[in-house]
Image (cartoon, rainbow, N blue to C red):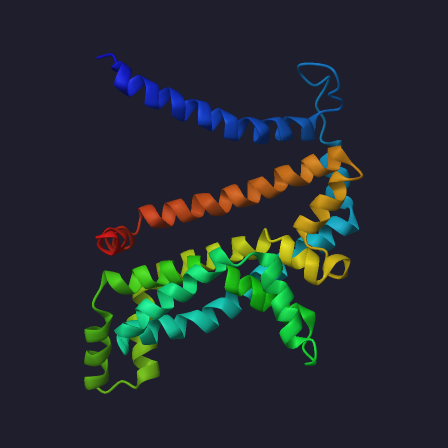
Length: 270
């Protein structure tokens, strides 16, 4: 059965949007393998030389390590700060959740430039390393994603009753949290960790303003390459997109295999 015009037009629009979004990424990937691509429809040849040069560069290795460390530290810091608060709000004080929802919207309304400028003004007279301020800033920027993911996990089941039953059976609050709560929200914790890691891994504005060349992450290094070497920057951009694609694929697989997460999303929307 052929699709009607009412079905064909939306599909055509979706295809055009996908082509518009994917075409630059594909072109960048092809350019990263090309020997030369000037005034021709297709590149003159293909080579892996640019990838070899970039991987062998000590600046690339250092920037990649810094980005990975920043992502890991931000993830640990964010979970350590937000997970206890979200647990307390869902189990002990549900009325607090309305205030938390309001707070989680603030990072969307406050630009990164204003956020980092405010943090510098607050902590300029305190002997705190700027890397700590950077961790705080990126953690705040990742708050909406982290909060929503973890909060949905707590909505899925009656964790308050489960926690109280564990206490009645003789467990301490910490032991009940580790034995009852944590195993049931491990998928949500993993998803929140990946989202926080991705936010920190791809962050540019706050890192560049706060530390600049003193802490050159992969994104800062990418923008520096764009001004000096287009071929190398296309290689780095392709690698960056590949990393994000792998993380996105992992997130999709986790969400599809976790029916509780889907149920919590539907319940929260209602």
